[in-house]
Each structure stands twice: as C-alpha cells, then as structure tokens.
Amino acid sequence: MDFDPVRSSDPEVADALEGETTRQQETLAMIASENHASEAVLAAQGSALTNKYAEGYPNNRYYGGCENADTVEELARERAKELWGADHANVQPHAGTQANMAVYFSVLEPGDKILSLDLEHGGHLSHGHPVNFSGSLYEVEQYEMDPETGRIDYEGLDEHAREFEPDIIVSGYSAYPRVVDWERVQETADAVDAYHLADMAHITGLVAAGVHDNPVGIADFVTGSTHKTIRAGRGGMILTDEEYADVIDRTVFPGIQGGPLMHNIAGKAVGFGEALEPEFDEHIEQVVANARALGESMQEQGFSLVSGGTDTHLILVDLRESHPEVTGNDAAEALEEAGIVLNANTVPGETRSAKEPSGIRIGSPALTTRGFEEAEMREVGQLIGRVIDNIDDASVIEEVAAEVDRLTDDHPLYE
Ligand SMILES: *Cc1c(COP(=O)(O)O)cnc(C)c1O
Image (cartoon, rainbow, N blue to C red; front, side, top):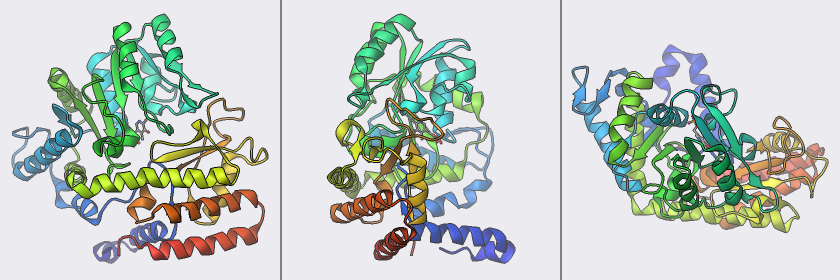
C-alpha cells in the first residue's frame, strides 16, 4: 500500500503503518472479531470525506456542501436495508458500543432493567458490565450458558426474565459458536413485556449471507459491527422497523453523537456493496466450512470444543481437560510467537479467572478472506495443536513459525 505521502511528512507514523501491513501479511489473524477489509474499503476510509461536517441525515443537514456525503450515506443505508431486509438503517454509530448506547437511550430511563448474558459467558461490555456506562446507568442482571452443553440456557433465561421483569433483554454474543434462537428470546421478551435488542456484532456477515437466522423482523432493535464478518471498515449500525426509525435517528444525532464519520460511512457503503455481490455468500459459506474444518482438526488431536463444535465463524477451545496445566493466556502467547494471533477467552463454567481464563477463541473470517480453504485450515489446526502440546519448546515454536511463513507467503494480502 502507498504510504508515500505519510512517509514524506511523518516517517515515524509511516514506519508503524507499513509495519502493520507487514504484520498482517506475515501472521495468521485468528481473532474472531477481526478481518481484512478490501483496498477499496480502505481507500474510501482514507478519503477527503474525513474533512466534511455533515451533522444531520441525507437531505437534512446542518451544513452546506453535503451532496457527496448524502450520496455516500444514502448508498450505505439502502445497501444495509437490502442486505438485512430492514425497513430502516442508521449507519452513523461510530462503533457497536455506540449503536447499543443509542438503543438504550431510545427506550430506557436511567435505573431501568437490562437482562443480558454475562461477559464471562460471551456477552459484551456494552451489555451492562459494571466498568461500562451500561452497567453504571442501569440495573443489570445476567443470564448464563449451560455449562454442560455450552449453549444458551433459554429455559434459565426465561425463568430469570419472569422473576426480574427487565425492560430490555439483550441477545447476541462475542464468543458463541452456535446459532442464536432469536425467536425463543423474543417469546420471553413478549411474555415479560420487554424490548429485545439483538446485537449481531460478530455475525452480521453470516446473517447477510443467509447462513445464520436473521433477527431483523423478530427483535425490536438489531445492532451490528461493520468490521467483523462484514468487511466494511470499522463502525457500527442499527436496523429497525419504521416504528423506531425516528427515535433511533434522533438518539444517534443529536442525542449521543455529533458529526458522523463520513469517511467511515463511505467504507460502510463500499463494504456493503461488496457483500451484495453473489461471491460474498460463497465467501461466508467458506468461512463456516473453515471454522468447522479447524474445529474437527482440533478435536482429532484431543482438544475439547465448547458445545462440541461450531455453526459459525468461530470455535471456543476449552483447554482444561486436554491440557490442565496450560491457561488460555499461555496458549495465546506461545501461538503469537509462532505468528498465530488469537485470544484467550473464558469458557462456560470457568474455573480460573477472566484475566487468566481456560480457553482460546479462534476465528476463521480473516484467513478465509486470504483464500484459505478446509485443507489449510486443518493444517493450521495441527500447527496450533503442536504449539500447545509443546508449549515450552522453543524449537517447536520455531518450526511452526516457518510453516506460518509458508502459509502466509502463499496467500498475499494488500499486494
Ligand atoms: C464486537 C462487539 C460489539 C461492538 O464493539 P465495538 O468495539 O464497540 O465496535 C458489540 N457487541 C458484541 C457482542 C460484540 O462482540
């Protein structure tokens, strides 16, 4: 990529930008929430729209000179509506957290009640964690995974809701390898007269491709990230039906944000356009097939997967049985030395701590973007297994690093 203009004005930053491109080229990005956006998306995000103030919405702005901003935002909104079958899309949230904030601020008062999944069980900070605004402004109770099956305990969620009588129930998760039953959560929300926010952050791409059930038309509010399985650059969005369109738009601007990040909205428009191409569905089917192949390869080596497998873009490996001495952090650190970047993660029924958890979360989206298919995913599974089996053996880590070099050389990024 061309950083010449940066280099001539700021070599220190240029070094870091080039370093990051090289790092992404030379390592396997297996953090389940990450991906590689296309050069078209990157270029749109790096465009002169970063200079433009466009407070308001298309054809209703507080500033002049917004014709190109209007075109871009209109395209992003229309494409989002088409991808997810929504009546209304707001593409201005700076990130997924701001999208969730806008939903809460639209329908809750401070002190109202949120029922959501515990962060340690795969929830998100913005679902009511004490260190986040959502935890300090609202009264939060949390449901959990069934530690036996590694799946959402819908029965427990329903009982909990009837007791707690929440104002809103949040579904949608950060580390869940199975299909979420939006209808089932909606039944509970209806029974206790609560709103339902479906946060599909991780699985926006899977839903767009029809590989995961769509919460749009079921939940009152659907939020999502635009940089995870949909490769539209960093940001957030909100999808609703007509009923909530005005309140959501008013809450995003002027309620919680000022001028929209028009350069990012341009990235969203381009990335959504790419996702409307027929090849995108094939790509997502490959993402899921790749996660499954990786999971099978791990299981063949004796590793245990939470829920016994995956229907999505990620697997969650519980190391306690196969490698009781190895924490998720130990595994993630050794793997990073070998060029495989992923994250330690808590597992349902965690017996260690959130800081030193017993699992690792592994995603297939970024490798699939680079062109990996099942055979190579199995190979990557073998490499991960070898490192964890030989966690203190520097020579094994070196051998694996050489294999990672070969695999990454075979799949160039951003040439
Ligand atoms: C990633 C994620 C978000 C959004 O995070 P941001 O970093 O604020 O974009 C929201 N909810 C869930 C469940 C997530 O996994």
